[in-house]
Image 1: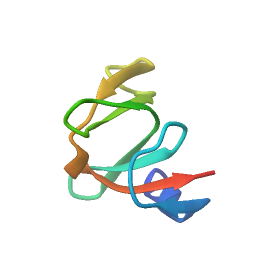
Image 2: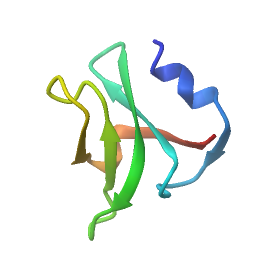
Image 3: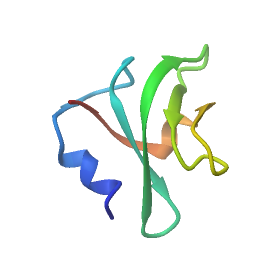
Length: 72
């Protein structure tokens, strides 16, 4: 629930933007957040996040998994 709380933080924006916080679903009740570092050719956000395979890493996530983008 802590990760999901970021959806109410800052100013919500309509899509991925470098520097925005992406709030994602993870399972039935979980969430995950990361910082958008880019957008791939298909429009999927490239996100830097922690606890990604037990480390901080950059990865492309399906855009359908993101339910909020916010700018701090």
